[in-house]
Image (spheres, rainbow, N blue to C red):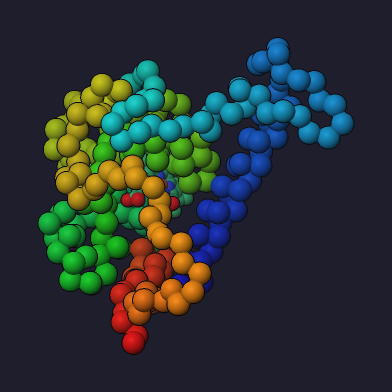
Length: 239
Ligand code: HEC
């Protein structure tokens, strides 16, 4: 990682940390919105519903919990230019090592991944994002990176609409309106690559003795997103 890239990431993280600290303290002492909130006594207080609300975002892949409100591609374009393009590129091509919005076509991306070549830096909304509601979730929860939680619902819908338009997601034309009804109907190109497994995280039989069965996983080499490394894990039989 070059020094300039490193400092971009560092600055971004520092800015996000400052934004979080500021907004946390703003909420922590703002009991005016909720009269039933406990008075500050001693050190600390129970967190209020009003304080939790901006961070309590979980829009599921099928549209569950998507809020009322709506946004357009054209409104999203203005927000994107002002708050997103500096990191994700004017045309979604990525900037300063931050992720692209527009990656390789999905079949090419899948073929690269299967061939084991570095496909990670060519990921985009058109090849690795399974569902539009979770894209809205990511943007509303975490973007812009330096000030997460600052987009209103309509702004989040608008910029979600714009980045899908930028990535040529089928059906998201210039006049498309994003809301809780339209988002779940969008077929993201990468949707068939995702499986929903609601089973347990682990499914192992307890073992206390001679448990090693001869297969181990090793990090073989690094792939990268811009200049950020991600380990490539490969199965290796070492016996
Ligand atoms: C300071 C730089 C920065 C700005 C500004 C920024 N982002 Fe991001 N964005 C990032 C980083 C870093 C990630 C990767 C975060 C991760 O993977 O956890 C990311 C990830 C994303 C992703 C997921 C990409 C993927 O394929 O995984 C989307 C979508 C996105 N940003 C949209 C936006 C939108 C919309 C805005 C403006 C409202 C915005 N970003 C502003 C840095 C930024």
